Amino acid sequence: MHPLLELLLARPQLLADHALAYGELFTQEMAQALRAWQRWALWRAAALCALLLATMLAGVALMLWAALPASGMSAPWLLLLTPMLPLVVAVGCWGVARQRGSPQAFGLLRDQISADMAMLRAARS
Image 1 (cartoon, rainbow, N blue to C red):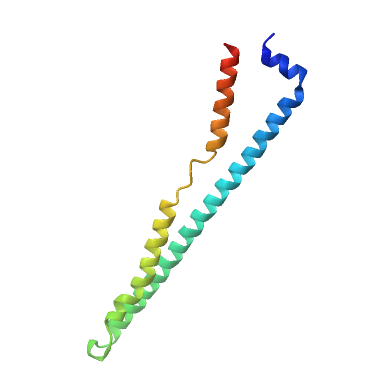
Image 2: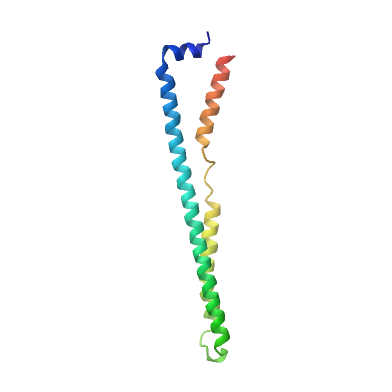
């Protein structure tokens, strides 16, 4: 009889403990992946809101530029600067969302499964 099978028959609690440990590892990995996804979604939503604000302010600036005479404006550069600020924020948020790539999801679980499979192969031979 295979030594692993003998061990499982003699001490079935070991298999239950191992399965429980897999469940805990999966729960931890899932929580970590969910937190990473939430951060990613939050940064993308902030970028989208800032881009929407920049678009609206650019439209208002364009209407003001078309409606008011250039000689009557005391600071025409503000028409360009005002929509640029939220645009810079949008680009920054988008960049943070892109660079905050989480480590490969469920990497520890994959490593544990690989280690267990290697142990089973070694025990089989």
